Every structure is written in structure tokens, then in C-alpha cells.
Length: 298
Image (cartoon, rainbow, N blue to C red; front, side):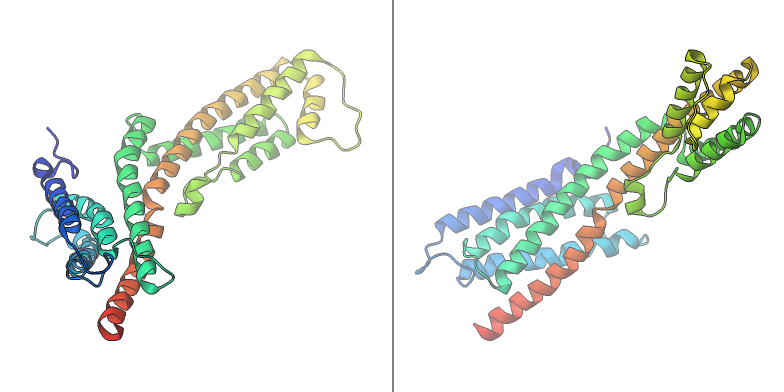
């Protein structure tokens, strides 16, 4: 049975985080401060210290992930602890505050911590869901192979379009130019396949050729109608070439859709880090200000 980071060593870190949260809850309800519960009581300081140590330790995961010769635990174990102990901060930090919030640096630190933890939960969801979807979408091939096949189909489309008409050639070129696959993370989220429009236009051309022999009488015709005008007086050879082009464009559309979905799913696995990491550093700054203000100004 595969031991994932969630089930690592029989849910070792889930058990540890659960005991930590349970102990915090029991201590909170057992504790009887003179005033309302807050971070300034002995329990508040204790929970605050535990939370601060956890936050600092959790930020070390990024360093551990990039240190391949580190022998202090396995990377899967670190990730498991990162997820479960990070989640436990919701309970520990909330009880540390004693539910006392206001317009101050202490509440800012708490809010930033909650954002970091919740964005981390999305990261767990993304890494559990999207790799499986990507494998299923690729159907035992690689993104590189699909991109190579798309490039070959583009070349074939251009060759066939050249044998039909210059305007069809321009239409195919525009569909290739409008295909945007890959790039940065944000570009991947909006991956676009220009073959879809070309397929629809080509289908409409064929329908027009079949339905009418009348030539459009407009002074300036869009590309599609110019092609209908050309093909309406042509023989079956041009129609056959058009059907060949349609087949090539349809194959490219299917393949490009798979690549677009693949890069979008990859982007969903990566983009949350562009949010999670900067907010983590903001949290460290707010946490430092919180600690300094408590010990030097209270």
C-alpha cells in the first residue's frame, strides 16, 4: 500500500497534531483567568510560544525541500508534518487570542496566519487532485509529444491550405497565431487554441458550398465568405481539399485542447505558491512585530 504524505507512518503527524489541539482545548476550558481569556495570561503565553515555534519551523519546509542531502527525516515526513501541524495552528492560535480581536498588529498577524493555512489547504487539494487528472488527460503520452504532433499538424494544415486558396492560407495562419499554449503560470491559466474557430469556419464553408451556388455580392467580404465565393464555382477537388483541411484542424483542435487542459492543471498546482509564499513572509514580519510589541510595550 502506498504511504502518501497524508497517511505517513500510520498518520503519525495527524495523531500528534490532534493531541496538541486536544490538549490546547482542554487547557483553555480548565484555565480560569482573573480577567477574560487573552494572550497575556500564562496559558496565552504558552499557546503563543507553541504557535510561534510552529510557524517558524513550518517556514523551514521550503529550505528542506531544496536540500536534497539533508538526512533529518524524509521529505514526505516533513510534508506530512507541515500539513497537519500547520492545520493545528487554527486551534492553537485562536485559543491563544482568547477570541480578543481588534484593529492592531496582533489581529493582523492572526489573519495572515489564517490566510497562509487556508492557502496551504488549497495546495494539498491541488496536489492530490490535479496529478491524477493530468495523467488521465495525457493518455499515456507526454506534453512534449503532443506539442510536437501539433507542430506537425500545423505544417500539414499550411500545405493543404496553400493548395486551396491564399485566403484559406491566411485563416490557418491566424488560427496558429491565436493558439497560446505554455508560457508563465498566469498565461497557462488562459491557454487558448485557435484551431477551434478555424474548424467552425471551415465547416461553415463546406455547408455553404453544399447549399448554394450563389456568389455573395458584398464589396468587402470576410475571409469565410470570400472562400465560399471561391469554392461555389470550383469543382469537387477543392471541396475534397477543404474536407482534408477540416480533418487536420479537428485533430489539432482535439490535441490542443488536451495540451491546454494539461498546462491549466499544472498552473493550478503552481499558482497558489505565488500567493502562499509571499503571505508567509508577511506573516513572519507581523509575528515579529507582535512579539516585540508584547515584550517591550506591554
